[in-house]
Image (cartoon, rainbow, N blue to C red):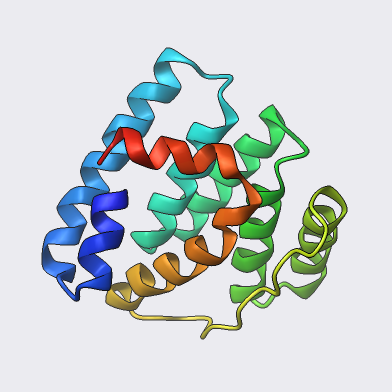
Length: 146
């Protein structure tokens, strides 16, 4: 996923999708080997978000929260997804959850409810950059797949 992020920042979106597919394959294997590791689900959600698959990203973050209800990052990411889908009540609840877990949670950015598929990658990079501080341990997982 880190490789996909770097290529996106550099404007090389065409190669980024290969990194995303590979990242998701690795994360699915990691989940198969250790299904209780909530960070894997959260990272898979970020990859799925970058691919523009909101439903699967939502499911991945929800699974992360089932494994660890005090995961501020997954709560925040679900707040972003529900905000994007204009489901304000759910967005607010997940934001409140994240803020109770980790004080000074950043505001959820406002984005169009229907970015084109090519824009989801840019949106995901911006959002994961904001959310990165909510789960310092997960940051070390990015280094694994560089």
